Image (tube, rainbow, N blue to C red; front, top):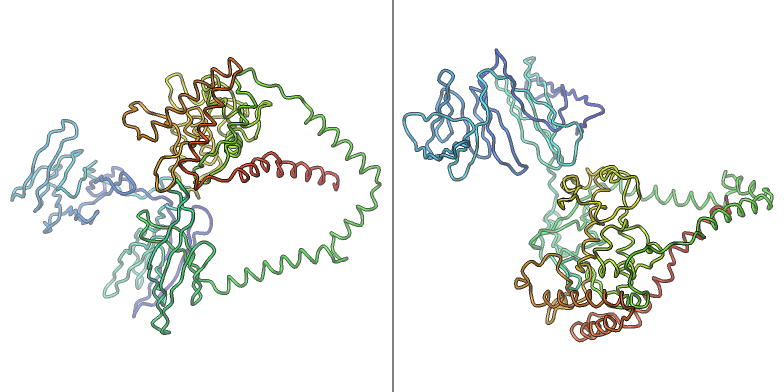
Length: 603
């Protein structure tokens, strides 16, 4: 076992006895994210660069004169000896030619001229920066170095979960030394490199080690349950059959969240599943002693916590006795000072913004409308409004307005709210927007041409793996989510309040953000768009006239429509009232304030 990183110990020097040969393997250097590069050298060998598209994007390979390499299943032979079935590259003076038993097309990039080159006894001229294809393989010869020095350099020092690491090995077989590069990647079995001296032949690879379990597991069925109206998984499980021929055992088992298959020291956890939902991913743990040592450690830690509270020999007990000796007057003075500070801080009167706002009464009526969230849960708009505003601004109120008023006002008068600073920023995103304020408006994220200012930075953040995301990447993803939520509120697409008639999965829909051609929309989406358009119109009129009878009537008709189409999945009136009551109690907000004062009092 060996683990190498960008920094830290890179020492590896081992000796092995293979037959009659003494083999020494030494790691000379570690190259994170290795990349081949060629620089001109007077004493170097002729080298050609081959460029092709791989799974990770553009891939570059170098073949020196005298070498043969298999690249993505095609053999490239750069030598005077013609190899059957290979793409043979020949050098005559400073010019290059090629021959092949297959027919290739050759497209010159500069002129887009396409030629068909069939097998011939006379080699064809090889053109650089031209695209060659035989129907299966497509590649370009990028550069040619008459004398080239091939080196391996590090493209970047930071390692990620998908990074490749290159090891420069010095291998000595019976005293004869040779050097070679070996490449490895986390979770991938390494490709071996062959070393030979005399009759001694050996292979060296660096990568994941395959482990064969002493039994078989067969997936009988994969089961997934979804939330109503969504493709989101509510739960999923694997029905498996374990067969142990050595012990003559065969057993069926159901693996799901917190239900582990434990057999023979191996523990199988439900991890993920195939996109076609026909295969399953199980994570495996095989550490009997480590598991029990961990459990015992937790038990001892918990027991130690408990004993600390009751034993008279601990520092905790000594401190508690000393605290009792502090005069009550001093404690009361401290409490009074903090109370005065907090009263001053929290007693500042909030000023309502000078903007178009829906009345509190109509917003309260809107909050009782049933909505289907992204996870398929049916709940009152009262809950969703608070979730959305908390996600956007970090609070359940804004400038003296409750969440129902803010969210509904943003929908009703979206143009007036484009410039309202309501989107919470982090320290890193403040720099990107060139501002020092804690909040930004929707308009702040777009330039005069309507381009999204942080688009490129957000793309890079999403493209990186979760384990490789730093503070900036995580912050960008959160801010991008807030901006998108605001856009969805403006358009009404955040409110799935229109049930689709006769939908077997009880799917509800909302307004469309982009609908250039209404005829392309489904009947349900057309119905939703009509409702939101009409509701927005009468709501704006009501804000001006202070007469909310028309929008109130629309909401009443909507509730009746919801009940008639999806009454089976709608929560009862008592459940709705209970949830709204719980939201208004703000238990956790009050508890956090109480705990703060309690902590200050004890301090």
